[in-house]
Amino acid sequence: MRRNVFFIISIFVIISILSGCHKSIDFVEDEPFILLTNKKGGENYYVDFYPRNIAVYSDGTIRIYTERTEDIIVEDDAPEVNVQITDEEVEEIQKTIEKNNFFQLKKELSDPGVMDGPSQYVTVYAKTESKRVGGEWPIDENFQAIREVVLDHVREEYNQWLDDIEEYIYEVNPGPND
Image (cartoon, rainbow, N blue to C red; front, side, top):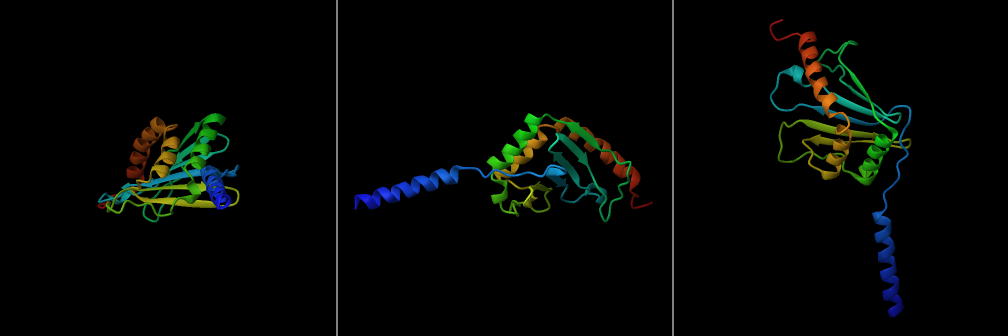
């Protein structure tokens, strides 16, 4: 009887230790290893629905940009920002992705109480898999921790880019009376 109790306790201890370990991710190197995408929601003018992308590369480059959609014109001269961060900062972002068990998150994280909210997505690219998670106004703590660690490195540049890209989008895209 004592042997069975000892065996069961040992199994629980091993399971506890293993569940506390974080899976190490083998991130891609020649393309972004993480991409944050955000789009406004709600009742806005159609040109407000352009994607706002932040891509982080293993070499420390963070690229802030948008892209053409079915409804929105974006040319090669659209404002784009590149920021350089250190190897340690890249490692901080990667460790945050691992610590928050990104590949175990549900793909759909929308807040069920929000309708027409902004959509936020995070895509992580590893050498063997990639995954996109998010939704309308996701409130998952792990998801938000990953987003915030990236935004913390480019918040000022991102806010300036938002001003620049909005002006560009409104200049390039025809209004309803044009």
